Figure 1 (cartoon, rainbow, N blue to C red):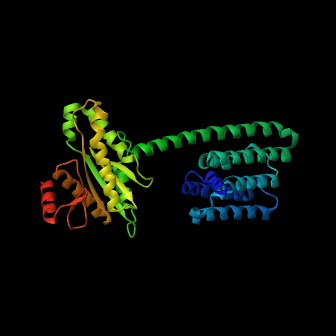
Figure 2: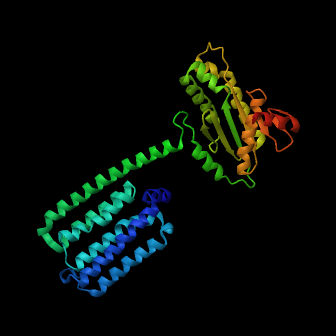
Figure 3: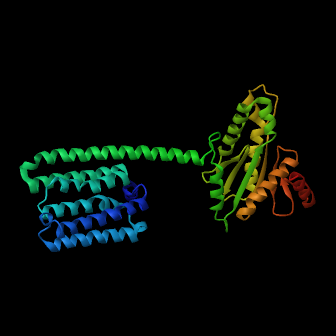
Length: 364
């Protein structure tokens, strides 16, 4: 329950919320100082109370400025709504100020909450502000302020409704844009930028990690012979096989063109080879009939390179080299860098001398 409450009360972007709250608290303290020193009619009669409010506001600004990353999520409704509303209410009651300017000051916590907090707690703050404004009008102004006690809260509710709706729409667009930036539009797989970031973020010591890189054999011939629409469908079908049967920790990517990859954290070489062989066999057995129809005579295949338990840079280099070796071995093949003694082709091993010749030929 507390975890759910913390998720709901946390700002959309805590660092941005803290940066926005600091100048608001400082502006509030400056306004109280100006009321005390420059505008005698708006001053709080109890000077000690006014300076206590100033000190409190500056203190809150300092806490947010220096400790913004350590602010508990559940504290934000207090920071954004309860505390500033209580301060505004106290200052207005002490100075007997029920003017429109005093009521408009309630817009500060209202606008902050509607923009920075999630909808549930934005509405909680709105309720607090509305109750405070009604109390201010009735306590200080009496029955003569009943019109303000009705109209102003309605305006506050309308402001929250408009801002919360706009922020939710903006959040939805950001999620959509982020997804489009991080995923390939054709296959739905993660994009190259995600692959580079995930590879760089790997924590390798003591944890096995494997990388599969594959591409469609003779993909240009497929495009030239059957059209790009068939080529696109081939890529989508291969991509679906990469995801099918994978673990929640595995991530599939489109690196570019017909080159795809799977990153397998916590997966050693034997398991990675078995996964690669399963993908290769599935493609060889049914991809052509799936794309061209059950009567298709053609056979579409993939070649796959596998690498495991190497440094980040070497992992990509080894998987890429294994892919070239698989192609030079005749395509429709799984090849893996076994750490120096040779290439592993399925369940067989080729000598190191032949492996070097294959890799050299592949790079010509």
